[in-house]
Image (cartoon, rainbow, N blue to C red; front, side, top):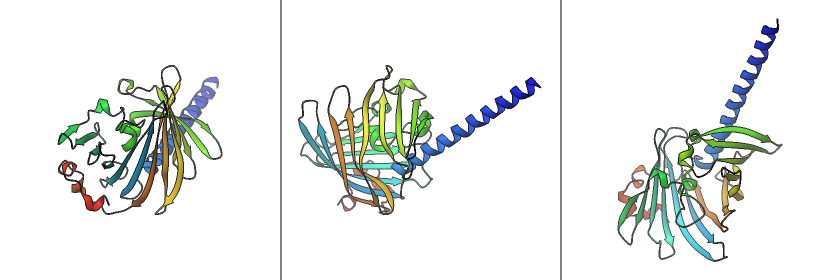
Length: 261
């Protein structure tokens, strides 16, 4: 009888753990979809302000285009074209998100007329001198981490995510605060091996655009070195009808201006 009771208790906990893990993954998948996959494609103008640890400010202005490959929440392509200031004007950045391997990333430097491949090891480095990383712009694969629900309130899920390959990241883990009604992550904290929160993302403003909840202002803060970067989104549109061929190396040198206006 004791063995039977023990087996029942074990099975109950095993099933509960499996259900919880499944539920957590569904929360993460929905948050990832809402952050990066709403509509079949999208366009936005972005104004970036970079504030360093001494209060000095720099700005960037660019257009970001995004197109899904067709399969739900799978392959995806990003194209970023810089308008201002003069030192980055006509610079372009492109990402092909892959399911079964590292993402492909390219950066076009107009002053050198050079297309540069960005190595997978560089995806967690500064995006054009800001406090955002390249990976922050196009998203991190949800299967790269293990996820655990660590807190729940009436309005929020708090998910702790630990990288499966710790050699590829500078963080030990991160926490996402996901808004239940919109499924948008409204805050992300990155922690080092000493459990120190050294980097924080915050959604500053959320609006409904074409029926989709959309972050229209966000901020990344350096909690150790100081400084922060704010991005403000305008002219946001979904389901624009972007052709696939503009997300190719050819259009890094020759920008598809009809889709950038």
